[in-house]
Image (cartoon, rainbow, N blue to C red; front, top):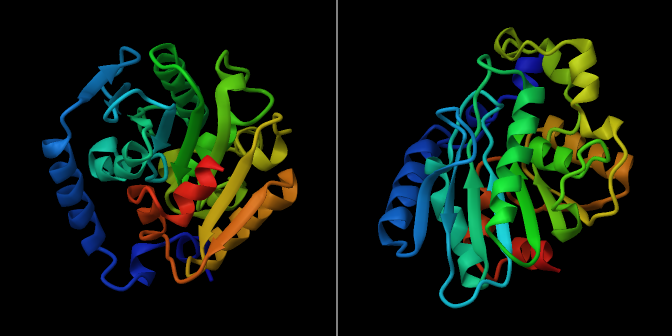
Length: 258
């Protein structure tokens, strides 16, 4: 199996390409009905340095931050707005940051952008923070748990949940997407969470049982490196594994808030 095949997802998911349109439709419907929201709030000067913020009915019990995936090359909060529903149903606010994409920046720059985004989100909120990300977003939130990232809000993080995370970037150097990512051996090591010490924070690696073997290996690798919780979600693949974030009563939401 080539590295490209190992990290391909939609080609190995039934009707995989249709998920993008489904997400767009569900996200748009959610935004249209959400009554208490701030969209496109700037946390920096870049065009994509913004976040969307949704408030629950009544006083907020904390904030869930959801970081999108897309291999640092694509994606935006606009595709996943509906994932805020589970948080709101639990009385939590939900913030969804965007970031500049490669090749305009390097992955290390995106890590810094997400830290800056959460700086801004933390400054406007009270209570615990629950930091969640999927795929490349799983990498980014895992980086937020590393000792070399020392934000002022670190003590407020109740849990980091890295869904289908990329904890080791070295295998991506052999993919054609690295023509755009531009990962070097040094950057792959420095930006791989498995090569960092984790802060004293609860971390869960969550992965679908039907995901590509490479993603199962990545999640297990993060678990092995950090001794963090690992959940293998039976019957879930790379695209539907995130659906638990929509449902306030799902096992995923229960684990996030445990």
